[in-house]
Image 1 (cartoon, rainbow, N blue to C red):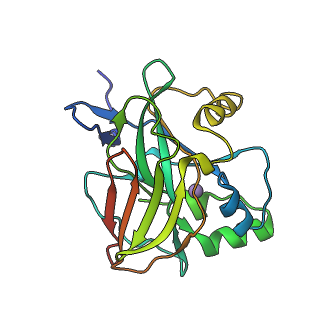
Image 2: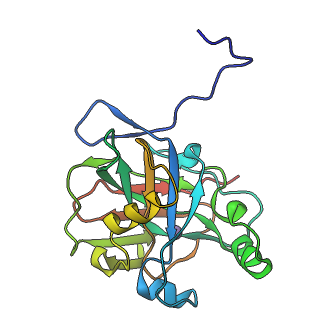
Image 3: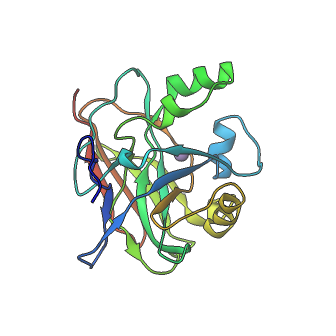
Length: 217
Ligand code: MN
């Protein structure tokens, strides 16, 4: 038995719909600009998928509420379909995630050609609902996000530029994609700012919805 200098942090995990077992999170990969209209609103045209990442312990789940992050005056919501990689290295399930983004820090990073870690990979930046095991949700399913009851983002999964299978193939050219990896697959148009106390409701047809309130710091 390993004699640790101090107790290791617990393994981050997500609940699974209809199962007692939990999905252990190893790593979070995220795809940028994967819906045509959102890519255009961010000033980009269709291009190869590109990735960034968040630490595994950025997940917020089981109905927990993330705290409003440090160091931003422009926190944005991005609702996303999340792929969960199972024991065989294939997509085993799906969830609704929110790629919380410090847009002001991202703008600075883009302007200066710096990494996105501080903009994307901060603490509690990946709220995610329960994983539903099984096949890809209906491509015609809607993907929506509302803030305080007002719809801000609404799209369809088949608006994605790169499908989940294509994204996984691309990810495998860059990393050894392993069981426990999550892949956030990009967001439709309508991203926008969040304030302390805002209630966020995110849903994708056929999957467990995600809801959280941004706790004041
Ligand atoms: Mn995103």
